[in-house]
Image (cartoon, one colour):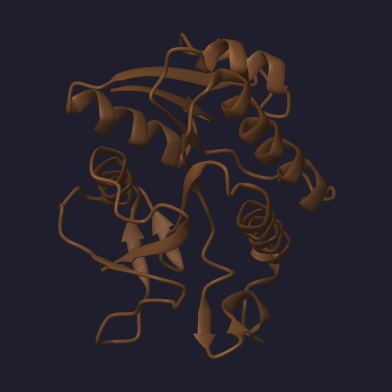
Length: 207
C-alpha cells in the first residue's frame, strides 16, 4: 500500500510512518518544513497535497493545531479541509485522521473536553480537534474516512499490540485510567488501513 502521511515527523505521525514501513508499506512523508527527507507542503494547500497524493492508496492526516497560544480551530479546519480537498483532486478515497480525545463522551451528551477538570493547557487543542471531527462528519461523506481518537493520555511508550477499540465513548481501564502509547495507537491505525472496519465513523483506541 502507498500511504501519504501529512505530519509525518510528529509524535504520532512518526510512529505511524515507522509502523507502516515495518509492514512493508510505501510511505511518503509530508511536513511544513520538509525536514528529515519529507516532502514540503502545507496541509491547507490542497493543490500541493494533491500532487503528492497522486498514485497513493490512502492519506493519513496527522497534523495538530498551533501550540503557540494563537487561535486553534480555524488553522486545524483549514488543514483538514485542505487534505480532504486534495484527496478528491488526487482520486484518493481513503483518509484516516489522527484525532483527539476531548470529543469523546464521558456520559451521554457530555464530552471529555467539557468536564470541569479537563486541563486548561489542552482545551483549545481539544476543541479544535472536535471541530475537525464535526466538519469531517458533515463534509466528507464522499470519502472513505475514519477518525481515530486516542485515549485521554497518549505518549511515547511500548509497542504491545494489545489494546481495545471503541466508538464515541472514552475507554478507561479497571483503575479508571485512560491511556495508550503512541506506538500502539500507530498499530491500531495501520490495522485500520490494512483492514478497514470503521469507514465513515470515529473510533477510539485505549488499554
